[in-house]
Image 1 (cartoon, rainbow, N blue to C red):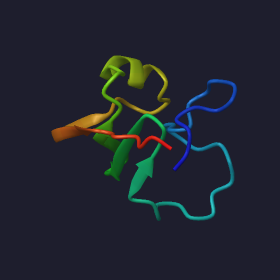
Image 2 (tube, helix red, strand yellow):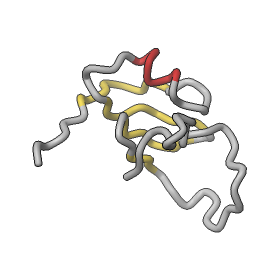
Image 3 (cartoon, one colour):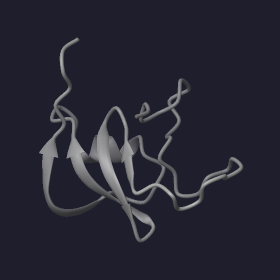
Length: 81
C-alpha cells in the first residue's frame, strides 16, 4: 500500500520506472491511496476506486497510460480508525 502521489504531488504509478529495479514484473496488483489496480499486459486495470474521485481526476495524478476498465469497478472502502 502506498500513496498514489509523492510529497511533491508527482505520480507513483508511472509508464516507466527511473529507479533501479530489483524485481521487474514480480507484482500483479498495485494498492494506492486512490485505487487498486491489477497490472496486466503493461497497463493498469482499475479494480477499486475512491467513490468521491472521478476517473478523470484519478488519471490526472497517474503517470501511466489511462486505466483500463474491465468489468465493474468497486468502491474502495476506507475504514475509520
